Structure formats: structure tokens, C-alpha cells
Amino acid sequence: MQATTFALADSMRRLGTESAFVVLARAKALEAQGRDIIHLEIGEPDFNTPEHIKEAALRSLAANRTHYTPASGTLELRSTIAEYVNRTRGANVGIENVVVSPGAKPMIACVLMALLNPGDEIIIPDPAYPAYRSIATYVGAVPVPVPLLEARDFRFEISALEAAITPRTKMLVLNSPHNPTGGILTPQDIVQIADIVRKNDLLVISDEIYNSHCYDCDFSSYYGLAGLPERTILIDGCSKAWAMTGWRLGYGVMPSYIADAVGALILNTVSCTATFVQDAAIAALTGPTGPVEAMHAEFLRRRDLLVSGLRDIPGVTCRMPGGAFYVFPNTSAIDSDDIALANALLDDGGVAVLGGSTFGRYGRGYLRLSYANSEDNLRAALSRMKALFARYRN
Image (cartoon, rainbow, N blue to C red; front, side, top):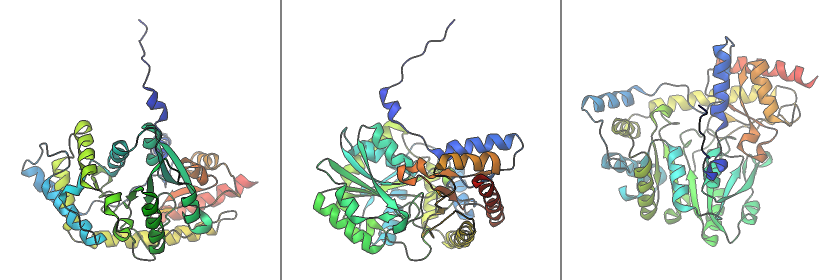
């Protein structure tokens, strides 16, 4: 009997994917064949979740905290998040502004679904985290790219940002520290962007998930410095700071009427975030900072090692990233087709990286490398890359 197939919704054709997980799957398949692969593709800390956080989760499980919670999160966690945001951003928010979700990515999706209508324009940095464009396109909105150029350390050109605004522009996405480039917004950038936002009556999503990993200067929060809480949605979570990617704990801080709408979307999709995970997040946000500081110091050493090694490879240029745990070297002198080069590195060199154009057209000719790996593996990856690039060019 022939199987019956049904047409998928038209909207599925507009939904993208995330290349990091695609490349990870390919790399794992090669490892299953016995290949030695160095993983620089996936964006997650290679550290263990700090012990005090795991202990809090175990206490929560022992107390049978395994049942439903309100869709927007427990009162205890939402109160803790409000206090944390007020302390770290100099803000003044309450629990009515906080929504919890199983990861920051669902929070981004729910915010965009709650606010964007078909035909609305949303300005997105290019290159950028793929989920912004994917979800905006899925709901029928129009992503408008504004380039982040190497010559400006991958920061917005303010005049280019202004030029991208039209009468249909509703939202602007900011991400600092930035994935994939490691670029950061300066306080001066924030003041200028906030002025544009006021003049053009825009909403801003400020994705600050990498805020604990800022290396050469203190972190500058758009949410805190812009002073526009009535037109700003803060995105943050526990994944990157406390090595909790698999726990799935994100949150948003936003005007209460948007929080109500996002909470309704959470309710209608995932119901709520696991209770014991929320209890673990309280331990993360209120616990000792030593583990985060230790990760930060290790990432700083790795960043310097990787950038120095990349600059030593003929044909490669590499800016020093200010934050996150990625480098974004320019490899266009070796091959402007970054996807082909990334495939060669994986298939022939045993190094899993991402092609820059998977993050947008202005990423063409670049590679994204995560330095969430050991120094020994980073040195080995550099050696393999140098050897493969030498063969690749000849």
C-alpha cells in the first residue's frame, strides 16, 4: 500500500534552520566512522554546570518540584530575575515584566510572533544569529539586513542603520556581545542607536545572552543604558554564563502588555519551563560568581591563543573579538566560498567550523570558530587549518 503524504503548510518554506546543529550532526557521523574531529562549530561552553546549581536542582527534585508552574514562570524565579536585571542593568523592573521560557530561542520566537504582522519590517544585523531572520520570515515579516563590517569591528554603521528605516519598520534587533563575530556595542553606539529608536518610534530586541563574556572592557547593556524600557525587550538566560545549554532556561524582560502576550504563547506551546530547572536558575542568579569568573578567564586565554594562531596563517585576517566565545576570521583570500572551505576543513582537515554566509550574506568569505574547546584542541585545530589552507591554495 502506497503511503499517503500531505502538503506541509506554506509557512514551513519560510522557516530556516541553524547550521551549527547541521554541521554538528555531520561531524558526529564522521566520528562514528572513526574520524578524529575537533569541534569548533557549536556555540556552547565546554565546562560543566557549577556544582551549586546542580545541587539546587537535586534538592528541588527531592522535594518533588516536578509539576506545572504558571506559564510565565514561578513567582520566585521571576522575582529573582527582576532583582538580577535591576542590579546588573541599573533598571527598575518588576515580576510583571518577566517571562521565563525553556531557552532563550523560544523567547525570541514568542516575542517576534507576538509583535510582527505580515509585511512589517524588522532590521537585523548581518551577519547574525539565524533565528532572528528565520522566525521573522516565518510569520511573514520582512527582515532588513544592515551590515556589520570587519572595518568597524563588526559594529553598526549608524548612517547605514538610519538609511534602512522605512515607514514599515517596526523593530530592530541588537545582539551584544555578538554571535557570530564577537563584536560589542560601545556606550557611544548605544546612545546613538537609542536616539534613532526614539525618533523613529521603534521597538528593540536586545539579545544580551553573552553578557558575562566581555573581555577588554566592561559590558555595556543596551537595555540598561538606553533608558527605554517601554520600547525594549531584553533577552537573556542561563546557557552561556553558567554552562547550562541543555537545561533550557531563558527569559525576557519587557513591557507588561507584551509579557502577557508572550506568556499566552508559552502557555499554548510548551505550557511552562521545568520547575526544578527554574529552581536551579535561582541558584545560578543568586549564587557565587567564582565559576563564571573562572570560565571568563579561560575563554580570554583561548581567545588570545586562537586569534594569534589564525593571524599566523597566510591568507587569513582576524579581528580581536571583544566578547562572546567566537572568532570570525576573514578567509576570502583562500576561498570566497566559505561553505566550500568549511566543508573541506571538516571532510579533509577534521575541524568542524561554520561558514560565515550561514549567518547572512555579509558573512560571505568568513568562518565562525567557537573557542569553547581546550587549548590543546585549539592548537591542534590551528595546525590542521594551516596545513589544509596551504594545500587548498596550491
